[in-house]
Image 1 (tube, one colour):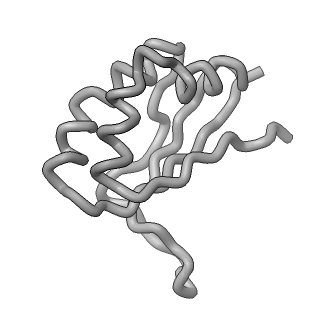
Image 2 (spheres, one colour):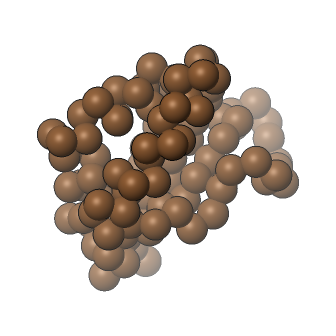
Length: 96
């Protein structure tokens, strides 16, 4: 069953974050994932002080593929690059 992952990013080092963006898509694709929505140009419908500035919605074939992506030892440097460029929260959403 398709699994969705929300990536929330609060940039802290723009240069490092831009370097991550160049590698992040390939890392997601390695595990069958794709970016569905997100990036610049979003419209905030409500913010009572709890929002993180950037969001990306990823789609994977299943929850196992999403877990494989985040836990892949071969991608440790790519994930570290993301963490050094931004404070992040990555959430695997439950299916409904």
